[in-house]
Image (cartoon, rainbow, N blue to C red; front, top):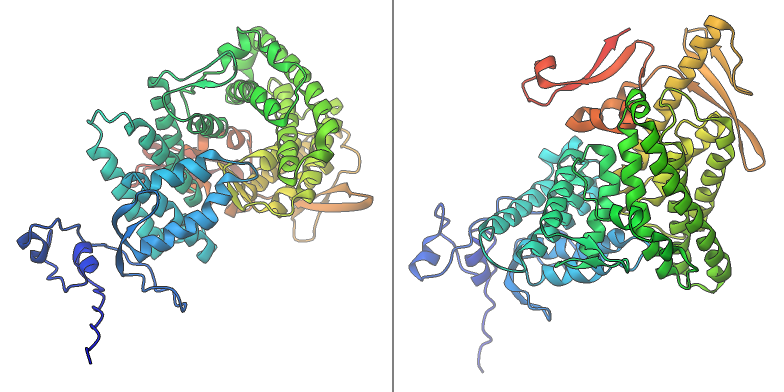
Length: 559
């Protein structure tokens, strides 16, 4: 009887090469003797190892295997990496794709992760970060430096950067696309960590590459680009979000098509939802950049060039009017015949259009006053449609790069003269509990509530000083302990409700801002003004605050 061959014991320590060969490693610094003496490449040592996942079919997380997939992946991977890669494929990709068919996440990134080591390690890093957030339910800035998942993700991300740096001087025609896809994965990871500063820099870096490549929009609406169109469209989409968070030097590839070409030709009758979406992208990109530039200017700066800005605004508004007319016709004629996914896409397209339309209408109004009352029905209508869209969603990824719902809730609430509408929008944002690219629903709700609190304070001061009339139903109450509240009535469906809003700012609001150096440049933060009866919050530079970290901090200046 022939004895069966004993299975080799897995090596749980040592370099990656020895662990793959299942032999004991001498673990010499730099490169082990087992590898160097036999002419093998010692692939080094993993610094961080993930905790064992104790399931019957789960291999030990520190084992290595040589894997060859149908798409050509053939390099040594640890089971830690395999776990993160699997999580990315099964959880992260559907979330990033959102409600749409996404050739970027569902095809291109997955393919490149099996052929490009830099993309592979970027994918593993993003998968580990997403899994860390699912496990801990806490943001990176609270536990990042102590959490093994975040540490592992940072190590994989650094590996990806090192691989890209090694190829920087090569003439590889694929290098630019590999760099751009890796950049998208990097910035998605930074957004999950709440690192807005770094994410904005990745957006800016990608836009610079696209600008160097001479990307343009053709007369037909398609992109002329040496890289995949889906990559360019994603950067343009992220640019629309990031320009509100301090990203400068935007890539303006659609302005010429909208302003100088016969853009009216795109606004004929749409026969398919895909046609409507393709026609909308150039207009949306152009309008967002225009609105962002207005939001970043002071009232005095707007007044100085108001004539030219108004002319540009009126042209964009005319295009939006025409687009909405055509889209509403398509929406009502085809909606019931669309698949469930297509209905969600149609809803999101309409919601985005209505939200951008309102934002465009109001971007030249004073930042120091509430919107005129004639805009209240439009704010209410946008909020009602957003609530209806959310109620029809059977499922929606918690984390995605789409930005329709939160942006709509923000635009419906911002500066609306009806405080009841604002309370509803803030409640809707809090209950949404999603992360849409640069927009976090909880942070957005906090900013909207603080903006409303500041304006209620101004109303109270004005009322105390001049006995001016308050908005219908709004009143102020001082409790026995001296706390001042605003009573705001609102309707939720047919029910009459009331909200008491304290006029003192909770210090926790600025916890996240204290970790973001560029927060002082955010248009939404700059609009807050006086945020506390005790004084004014402001971000001061490292020189002014004399902090050792060189970043500065949020400071409450007494009034």
